[in-house]
Image (cartoon, rainbow, N blue to C red; front, side, top):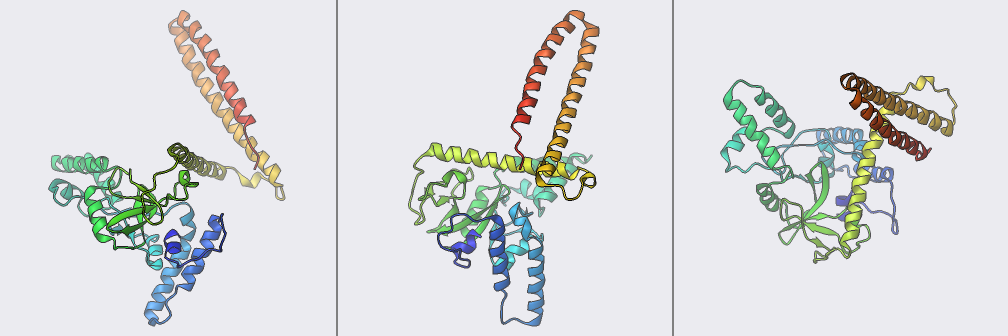
Length: 340
């Protein structure tokens, strides 16, 4: 969406300060429908309509994340997945910089033409092999992944700088994140979207000139603009991390809710009553968990007591001390619950 907005292919209403993910998906869906080529052959039309149908089917995934699988041989080389159709359909170039240096022969041999997923499977297979050469190859491949954990190599950065055209608007994939990227006067820049920069109006772009991620911040004209308050930016970044963690917890909670027997919940129940029932189920699971923990601790206590009565009495005292914080923690969790 940022690429399409910066390219003036999509326009939002003026003075709009807040937009929901659902609204963004509507704008994107409308653009895909309107961008259909007019003068094309029948075969091209059928092919485009099929791609459009496939893209619409995975459009909802854009709110949570797309599945792309890089290959280490080129900045535009990805294993084909249905999600890649969206970029092709919107004519948005997708890049990455996780490349093997062709001058390092042993790594080139170990990685080959594998995608990331294939390379992980190869490493596991090589480790279990009786062939010493395969074991060595798997070790080299594993070392490559460990040494390039930032998912950007200097060879990849050089290839990126060469491949991206001046003024081109594209998407850069790294560490399971998609960033808007452009090139200005031979230098690569990423659009700043971290929450920590929400109030930094003059911080728009961050230079991409090394693999460590510490770039220079610039304004919309690519003039150097350091953040006015680094501490505020740091807190904002921490808030973003916390929000990512809460999202993970939310997804986990959804999975737990799927385990609930919904057939036992009567029809026509109000939202408040449903929330209470879900909270009761959560309290029951929490209580069961703590009981299991306490029973396990009691069993350990019995074994220790049988071995040494003196140490058993001391451990029992400590056990009582440990139970009190658990009870307080459980009570705190109940008090902090909010019915949505």
